[in-house]
Length: 194
Image (cartoon, rainbow, N blue to C red; front, side, top):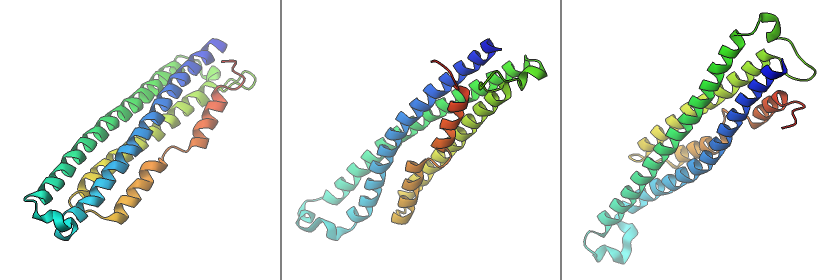
């Protein structure tokens, strides 16, 4: 039974690595979102002819400034898409870990699935933990996809209130309660020397 629990702990170590990668991606995601938001907020002001003052005498300055900002925004949105793809990779890894765990559980007799050794979790606890981690990150990935779509729509019709609401969602990651994730790891690695 100890060997089986060790296999599960290996799955959770891989899951923990993916979540560390996720946190690193989250920092990049927030930074890119803030940069994109700043440009979107500035675009409305840049399209106001009165904003250029004496610079209006330079032929085409307004169009050049707006075009430069739109080009920069396009680069940021492509970078956000790339980070989103990396988030998806984390979700797919967690899904694979869950699926493999389900296969491991099916190979065990029913009695061993709920058997505990000391404070170690039973096998069904392990599978439930993997399932929760996968579902949390999958839901957060879908939210991030929606946020990127909404941000793209705000380019044409900027709204400071909508941008602030999206920023709250970007920073908060509402589908991944950190306490719950830590609790899952505390259970799985109970009395683990590694």
